[in-house]
Length: 402
Image (cartoon, rainbow, N blue to C red; front, top):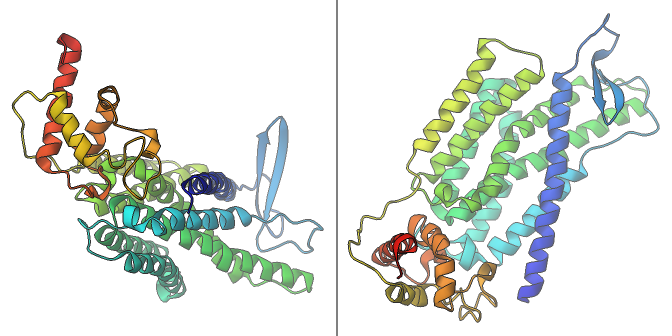
């Protein structure tokens, strides 16, 4: 594929994915809040679960929720589904463009697993499809009738997916796949359960029949699951900016912790939205804060055991960069995968190397996320040498010339 076309396609898909994701998350959060805010401000009305009064944009709104459905259908009924569909499709195409088409560069890492690109792609597709099947069977099983047992079951399912992904894929790909795994469950909930059940209710009303209350109950259960799964999905999708998570030797633990932390935060928010308070609600927030501190205390990166106790000059550092980094980060890359330097960063001159020294310290020395998959074989000693040069340069900047 032409690199310029690939870049524009990536930008378009990412923009669509983010915009539709915001719309989907917004409607999900709003309706869960709306459901929790329902009250009976006077004598309960027959067939009405409750009402909520809202003010926004200079106007007042009164919303009522029916226990099952209205007696007759209005001419116009608003559905909320395309946000979920477009979010999933744009996300899948983005996954295919970056991690399937660029599997050798982005999906696999020989240091993690010797799996081939083809097998890795099959595992990826199997996780997305198999994840939904396992989740749906779990919800339909006797476990699905117990809220606590089902929550534990879904947590175990996500934890298993996290372990598989982090054992087979590169760090960034692993986290993105966990997000895709959860996102597929959420989108398929909308496509396979929530919307079909709503259509069945509408069909019954139009036929003059009483709708099955179980349909609404099942749809609400899946909608609530989506609400709780939203926060970990968003975290997984932005994780590729934070190698302290995905490059950690405990990276699968971070995923599990993120799911638990997100669940506690959503439980607290939902309880407060429902007007609940007291020690039990406060404990949710305290537990979330405690768990967050525990996650922050987990070692995020492998430390470099090699210490350089001598002065390192730019010539020595530049030689390492020339050998390990310039294949990609040059105005004319020699790496066949790149037609232009990634993110426009080139190390063709001493001035450019000095300019990007803080970034080199972060991605090549501290997090070791570069070179990508360490395909040029940068050694631990070379990383330590770069770190010593950067530390020395910072000292020289304040007290002398290099």
